[in-house]
Amino acid sequence: MWSCVILVLMSLAPLAVSLNTRAKTIANVTRLKPVYNFGRSFLGLDKCNACIGTSLCRKFFKEEIRFENWLSAGLKLPPSHRKTYFANYTADTENWKPVVISRLQSKYQNEVADRKICMSASKKVACSIENVLRGTERFQKWLTADRLTAELVQNLPSPLLRCPSQRLLDRIVRRYAEVRDSGSVLMRHLTDRDKLRLLYTLSVNTHPIVLQLFPGIEGWPFVRYFGSCGRVIVTPWTIPIREFYNASSEVTADIAYQLLQITHSLRNNDLNYFLYYTSVHDNMFGTFEDGRLYITDTSTIGIIDKKEDKEFVHEIHGENDVFSCLASDCKTELSPCGNVSEAQNFIKVCRDLLSHLLADKFSSSPSLQQKIDRFLSLCSDEMLSTKVTLEAASCLMELLRSQRSCDPRFEYRYPECKYIKGY
Image (cartoon, helix red, strand yellow):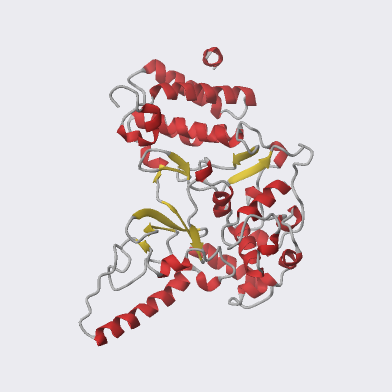
């Protein structure tokens, strides 16, 4: 705590159908068919195997995943141009839980990427994108490879693959959830189709891969990955952190504390991976109804393996190909691996999120607000040393810890609070 003082001083619902005659039954069955045909295009299933996967398709077509207001008006699916959809998910047809159906890219971005694929092979605007991708030099290397190596993912745009260690690449193969058999670091259990889907996902957006690598059930601060169908994935519904900018000081103190605690865990974990933010935004974090905070968008998270020698951690250079450009214009502006500081996460969180979340929240206690503002200023300053940034973030966590409240709004803290009087 003395270091903190020093720092201050320094500066579908279900579809119900009543059928009275066989003719009506046939009419309704016929009516359902075009919906599912349209659904294949809506979900991006018609683009497989240049897609994310098919692990949840059965649930979609059995109506165990239902869009918000789906089938309520003329059996129409929601507009296809949206990137996210609220929905409900069930495992037993009785208990439903709110989820979000997401596209990893917008419909427009997918169309642009598909055109790039066709143009890369000098094809017309419309072509078999799967055939084009299968014919690429990179994928031909994937077909003959028994193990995922740095060479196979070089120049893919995701920060996840900026500084890949073999340990991380093995984990990707072992945890890949879109195959029936998993657990081996060798890719022999992956079919040609599986390999193309994995490569496509790594090229477009690694968000679902990160959720598979570090599941919340193992203590990681990431939402659950339910699975995918075509080019959409399903994850739990959460309340975005931006919804709390005008909340009470007790609520914002709790969320801000959790945010700092999550950020701390990304650089201090049992697996010795340093997960770092390349950028942060207020839709990147969200809370469940019990108040617990999670990372809901991992697409801008990079990973450095702390078990590797620092000399080994470097960028893998190579020529760009069509897989390098599916989510961007082929140019990446990520910092070199060796330039990533352990203070980077706290700088971005303090500057881009906590400054909004904690602004004037404790005006009833000017001295407290002054201390918070001071620590925020220190941990937001890129010009200060890593040591000062980390100490400022630690001191801010201690201040926020003292302002947290034990009440039913924070149900996730019940084990911690159950013996506190009045809870």
